[in-house]
Image 1 (cartoon, rainbow, N blue to C red):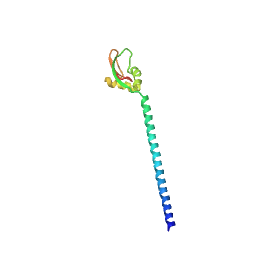
Image 2 (cartoon, helix red, strand yellow):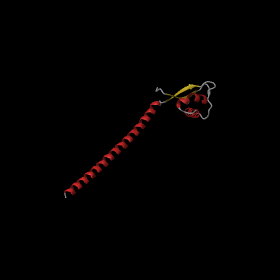
Image 3 (spheres, rainbow, N blue to C red):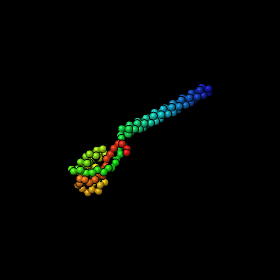
Image 4 (tube, one colour):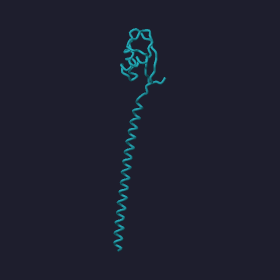
Length: 122
């Protein structure tokens, strides 16, 4: 009977050891997966932060200019559109919208409100 108890106790110790081994293995795997997840999110945050540091904020301003002989909306747009991140065509349309123009015709000695962009806050 004593041998039977020793065998049962030994068997129970092996079962407890196996259960502890499974729990420890599961805990290690969970820790590894959590670390990978946190590291991946951190890397994405760092990359996003790096990109934002390289882009400058552009501020949009308006001013009135006096038109000279030979000025066209398209020439004015070529001068100012790039700094605002607009195509020449988009800039011409914006000039028409803010000045209430229906066509491209402008006259010298008149004033035109234009948009200009700058990275300096004024």
